[in-house]
Image (cartoon, rainbow, N blue to C red; front, top):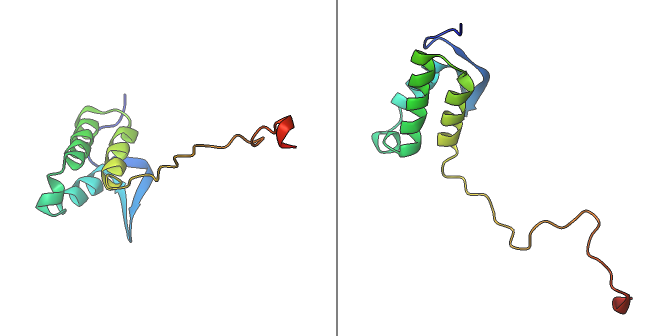
Length: 98
């Protein structure tokens, strides 16, 4: 049977600046100390719900970690490359271009 409770530690701790979140309780306390406007964001609410489900219901701590990391990176927008990925062999050379 899996261990339950708020003292369970993440398999891979989450580092935020100079702070490290090692247990589920650390992550919950971090979320609780956020400003009210940021704390009310749907990503943080989902992260807190994942923490509660893992702490009280058991299950892998990776679910809670994913929720917290997604909430931390919610404003990151990857840069779009409209050209797309070039194949490793490059463009095909036509006989007329030689």
